[in-house]
Image 1 (cartoon, rainbow, N blue to C red):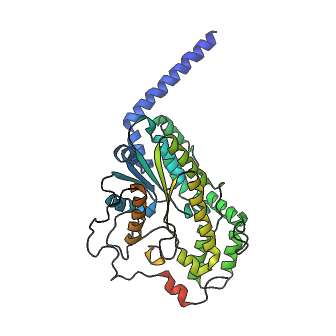
Image 2: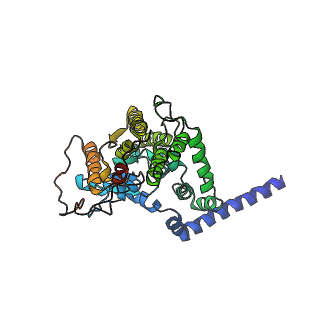
Length: 374
């Protein structure tokens, strides 16, 4: 009996010591650790406390075209101009994805218990669902940051950080996962055998095509970024499903918006082969989440190749014309049945500056005249 008493006293002392250390850490070093390790943690509470529309996205929100744009407003900035009577905040950073947005929802209260109406807009893009993004070398840093998207005791978060108690696989390990995916993923499940059996076979075909290096590297990138078939087993799809479930539980109006992709260059290089895969994946996302009663805004097919900042690699980085169009489409959905503000004034000579000529990848692709790839 005496030994149990001693163990209990020591256990109580350890618990008291832990909570005392937690109090000291929270009042001293915790805020500096948040600033150091978690780039947007401080913005999350502020966004949901002060705004009634919160926009969650990645670099597509804030990127602009350095060749032609003289207007650098983000998608969320344009959205605020279209909806001047609504307070809009943005939580965005490059390389973010639905898995991180999902963890941010841990910080939100239950809006069933308050009178506040919150609308959450979450970006969807095809590349985020593919192996290049899911097994990105940046993911360890993302997961480290996500430790702070929690209501756990601050000291416990610091302990997890020190012990690397998160998905901290390094870049070579993640590269192996990409290679394994490209080697084993079946591309012919929904494409009627019009494409090679796996991404790896497609990449080998490109490598052995004898085409010019610039073409080859660009085509290689498009297959790596878009050469996959989406289904319910995809981790990003599962994350988006869980976001929908939590938003319904917490009485948050959820809106997904699907970003445009550069179908023009995919068509130019591969004909219907890659475009069919991209279109099927976009249709899957729209249909899947519409069936879950989530508002889905389809911006997938509203662009052309001249509106992309990155001409030699597929990204969702747009000029001001397209950023404004995306925001307008979102605003129309959110404002229903009311009309949006379409009369706001912007500077002259703003988006884009047509006197500046941006180098377009199609000039080199068309110049050599033997496209698309077989």
